[in-house]
Each structure stands twice: as C-alpha cells, then as structure tokens.
Image (cartoon, rainbow, N blue to C red; front, side, top):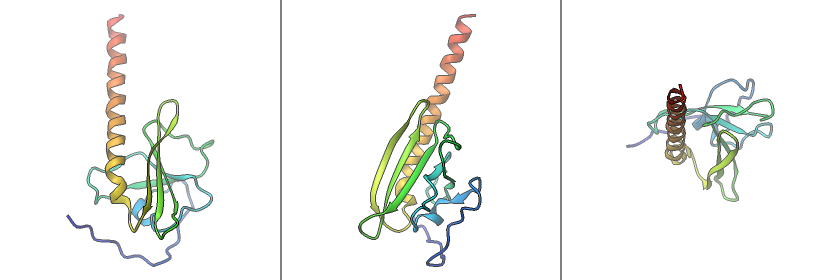
Length: 142
C-alpha cells in the first residue's frame, strides 16, 4: 500500500487559536510542538493507517483533564533532522509512558499508528469487560 504525501508549504504555521479545534496529526508532525502546549491529545485512532488521526492541543493538564484511555503525544526535534516522539496513556489513576520513538523522519504518523490504535482499542475492551464484571457482581448481590 502506498500513501501519497500531502503537499504543504515548507513553513506552514501551527494554529493554536482554540484548544478545542481538531487538527490532523500528519499536518503537525513536521514542526516542533509550540512551546505553550504539553502535547496532542488522541482519544480515537482510526483503524486504517491512511485515515487521518484527529488531535487537540493540550496546554495545561490542571485545567484540561485527560480521560482514561486517552493518549497524549509529544515530540521535539532530535539531534539529527528527525523528531523524538513519546506517547503517554491515561489510566484510571495515573498517566504512564506508553512508548517512545527516537529520531523519526518525515510524516511519522504511520510509524506510531499501530501502537496507538491497538492500545486505545485494548483499553476500550478492558473498560467494557470491567463494566460488565461490575454489573454482573451487582446483579448477583440482588
């Protein structure tokens, strides 16, 4: 399968006008994150790698709480000409390091897609199983 790169200006600006504005991750990956943000929030990753991953900038976690199952991506320029990318997963009681990818080049969304898609799907499945178990236990005590 081949993915056709999008054409874009070499120095397209990153829009931070609203933290609720959905942005396409592949449009952001060629530039360092703005200094005013902690990362890009992902709540859903489409099953097909060619489909766009929609994100929202997160500026301050004290006012913008992550929901369990959310992934926060962050990236910064590496010593080479690539990007160092990290992903954190929000669990019910903590935020954990999910993965890190050093020195990724170009549009790196296809590289991180499989991990992000599978982890978000697994978290959703475990959440449903946990809810079903709680419901079964509740019904059993009636």
